[in-house]
Amino acid sequence: MQVFQQLGEYDHEKVVFCNDNDSGLRAIISIHDTTLGPALGGVRMLPYPTEEQALDDVLRLSRGMTYKAAIAGVNLGGGKSVVIGDARTRKNPAMLRALGEFIDEMGGEYIAGQDIGTNSHDMAVIRGATRHVACVNESAGGAGDPSRTTAYGVSCGIRAVLKATTGNDSFGGRHIAVQGLGNVGYALARFCHEAGARLTVTDIADAVLGKAAREFNADVVAPDAIYDVECDVFSPNSIGAVINDDTIPRLRCPAVAGGANNILAEPRHGDALTERGIIYGPDFLVNSGGLIRCQEEVLGKATEDFTVYAKVSNIYEQTLHVIGMAEELGVSTAAAADWIAEERIAGAR
Ligand code: NAD
Image 1: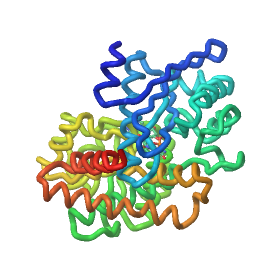
Image 2: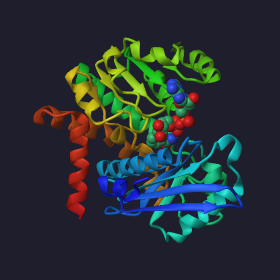
Image 3: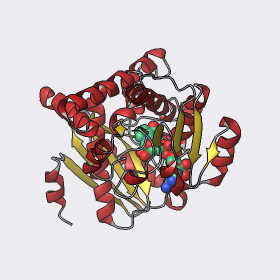
Image 4: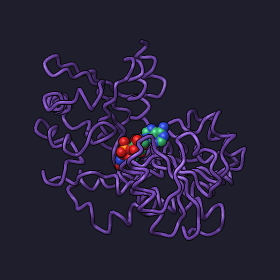
């Protein structure tokens, strides 16, 4: 594994490998960039097939957090951690406490939060070992799961791409195809439904599909069929890399915007969407609502206050700004968003 070569490629600051034989913890904490502040990012627990894949994921995700904070105007850096193992069978309190001790040794340089495979109750366990953790559940005195705020931000990003493609940002009568009905996707589907949109949804979990069909009068399709749905916006809210060489030719929509991280398989897929005339709301901007809420939590401010939602609703204006800049410069929206984030960090340096 060429670790330093990988760190050098995107200028990562630090990677910490954490091992605790007693609890079975094997984790990697990555700090990408702390120019704007301490590095905040979730703890992802997955049964990575190889250590290389775990390292790749944590490096990619921590870099994404740097860009997310930069474009959202948040004064935090980019970090992330991954725990290797199946969260359903391997996660245990001793493992989470051991991770908390490693985080504590970093002295506030990294602040943990929830991500795939962890939840706000796990964050309360981690807080037993360190105060450098966000998203702790409400009954333990924290701000809890940020997913609903993330979903609200995604709805603002979708309104922006609707405005850009139709001239009107109303959900009324629009058709949104939602991939993934987890914490973010389900809340997003509710926002869209309540605002008057028609929904087509998919997930790999059957139970949630029946619920969405009943609650939102949504049409349900098989996971692989979502790319072929003719709609106003395709909204990915599950795994990453769903916009790729196979799926782009199949899309029958003028816009893509969703909550998932790393929606584009590779940067060149941003250009491929532009070439097909599909407007893309950059993922790290559209899904930054949860991070904006986490910043308030870290600063000890109220997180369900209307001021948080007012800040999150700036995602609408910022997405339109990125779309306008991309058109002006003749580049993809993904490239324009990268440029805005990089300029903010360069300015802070
Ligand atoms: P989650 O685990 O609660 O939900 C993911 C959902 O996607 C699950 O219902 C799962 O069954 C479904 N899914 C998995 N593979 C699928 C597939 N191939 N096709 C269709 N559905 C599939 O996760 P979440 O918290 O809702 O996060 C969703 C995405 O948003 C992730 O990429 C996450 O990194 C990103 N994100 C989340 C937040 C947040 O606040 N939770 C913030 C920013 C970004």
